[in-house]
Length: 343
Image 1 (tube, rainbow, N blue to C red):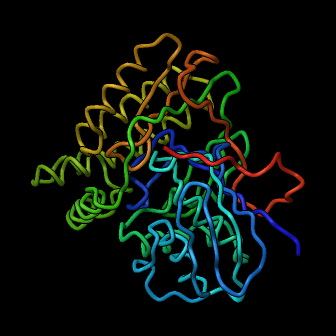
Image 2 (spheres, rainbow, N blue to C red; image 1 turned 90 degrees about the vertical axis):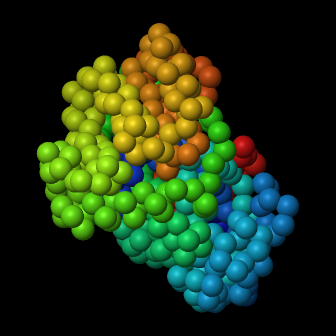
Image 3 (spheres, rainbow, N blue to C red; image 1 turned 120 degrees about the horizontal axis):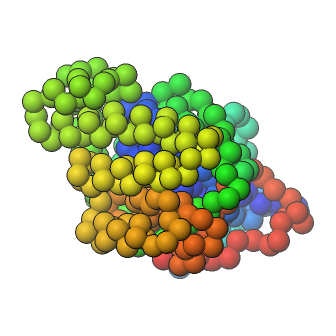
């Protein structure tokens, strides 16, 4: 029986956090750290993992993924619940994406599972399906950025993504820069204040309309101080995404770096998703020679920071490269399965 591989990359967001669930702008890239599922057809869904001691065993129809054990199986079950596939699979999961690091390890797993189970549709449809799967499995109302960038990655390019219009505009990553990710602290969005931030943005939109269309002046007029801060971050962050894309196109790396630092300050001061450990790490890396800019990346409350640097300026961390999105790949066409990873 032919063994196949479903491969999904990790994701790093260069700028534009906590804007996707209001239909705003983000600027991630799919990166060369991978989740692979080496599989063959089966009647059920049977998966083992290089990083988890307990296997996942599921029927091809799941009503409530939150009841599934072990915990990592909930993400598999979320996809199964959305697809109810005609054929199951038996396979093994390996990854080089740091688990709990804010580089979308769970989202990559979901996208890879969907492809392995026979998903056949557009990038947008794949992103929407796996976003629903994530929301059902975790109970966290995450936006679409992670799945969209994992599914729609373009080699050598970051992705200017409009999460309202669901469009992707690839922007070349300049050859003369390194993108370096450092893992700082394990985190999970389950049990965090992520859902509170979504609710606070909804409260802002109930007062002033869609944040993707709001001005800074209108956002700053909100009476509630917490809701006002959240709205001010989202409105300003959308503009920073536009300016960052323009800076990369113009090879204005100093300007791009300044925008990353401003984004981190906004996440720290207005959105309250940073931590003292993340702030200290950003400040340290920003002080190093050859670093244009640095910020926390992902949902917050821990995870990773990402830096834009001169080549070779930062050797502590993972230098990542923009790659194409998730796909079924020929087992003979890659260097072997991803190694077990995670922190």
